[in-house]
Length: 493
Image (cartoon, rainbow, N blue to C red; front, top):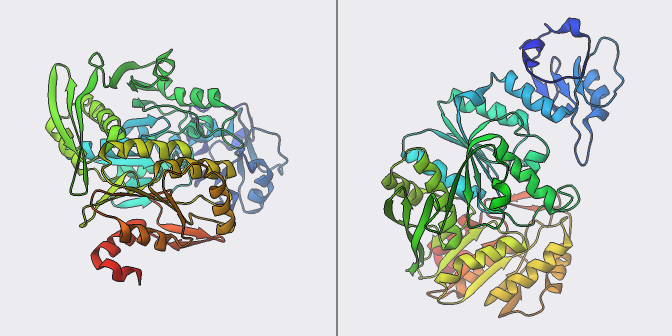
């Protein structure tokens, strides 16, 4: 594509070599390791590295067009575009480069601390039942038809977002559901995208510290940005931060929650545990209409996530019976993923990996609790030690049997991580066991569970690997559980 077309409508602060505006650009690049001759190199500043340092390397690899926000030294034949913020530049330039595919998609964005992934998959499932072709971008990756592209971030870099948008449009997809993270807003990954629908799930302190957000106020201000760039906003009216999120919003406001005076409500909520299945039911009420939903998404978190999805899809014209059908069909890998065991107990695999998320998980299973609760957990290596203390405390306080094990130790020793976790164990409610081998830890719980018990396997969720000393070994918890249940105790030999 011609450089002048890539720059259409993009703010710049200077242009050395503007006589080359008709130069052909093969691709945009923000990582010099993947750069090819004929690409434009955009210098991005990150927490750990600065792309400006790699401009000379990019030049040596054949790049002759650059965008930078700081001064850089380049030979005279290099075209240099100056921008106030290269992240904003990359976002707008990427949209142009891929032909502005966002204009051909219905765009739904979700932000909040908890529930984004589950709600996104519910919305996608319901819209799929209604006949739409839907793409998903989020924590689990970017899903386009049968293809899944892994990402290091819930909200990928802007270039990748627009690249995925273009592929979606080319594949006949007409709707995309996105998780938009606070870091995504902070680093302008969604800059320039005008969403049709924005969703606020809930908010509580998270992602605060080095390399993330300076404080809670910055965190919530980043989240709030969504509602100045969407047409209609859906807000969880039961959350304490909703009024802050709605204040000054430049969009139409719709509210959902458990009170009668909201636009979309859930009434007569019930929780049922039967033969290892955890069932939620409620009346979905809106516009004077009430429909009874029975769905396999447990606890109050299941209520809020499914209610939010129902509100969005109802607003888009999907009938209630199709909404319930889509909710029933939703499978969210590693998010309250329930496996019904033949022995009458329940296994739940969940990504919960910090104090807040595990507390939410225990709140979720509380209404169904008849027998004991087993929890298999560890903590990731090369991550905050404070998280380990908190996890050790909250999990052992809420479990009848706590099994401490490995969870992506990375370059740390499992024994050291477990020692940190045990430091946080002060008032356990039941038995605390250490089994370093995670597969054996899972087998231990499966061997000892009885009818009515609940086994929680937390921390990895959708991950299908165990990372040890820089190597990712195959490790799929659902496969391990199903293999054991299908083969009985022989699976542990």
